[in-house]
Image (cartoon, rainbow, N blue to C red):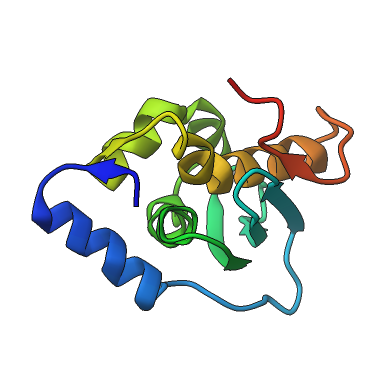
Length: 142
């Protein structure tokens, strides 16, 4: 799987992969965004509902296909995003995702781990007019 760490965290990743949380589609999301990791074939689509003042994430769900790391990361991230401010979302970085997963991620798998974070961040930036992008990709990430 390309991860190292305690058995407890590996089990948590497998649980989120086999029993993902917050999956599906929302009928009227504030925004929807899709991203892919072409190296691994991962794809994630997120629907996000913001509060009326557009400052807080009220609801987020995802649909996806891909490796255990990308799908578990998306599941875990959706749990973390509920109630988070949009500013806090934009401050998340690669280290936050790795900490959330609780395991060491090999350089070959880091793009799998951060895909959901990038999809959520890019979706918000597009919604607020800060970015012009059709689809997020990890292709050019270092």
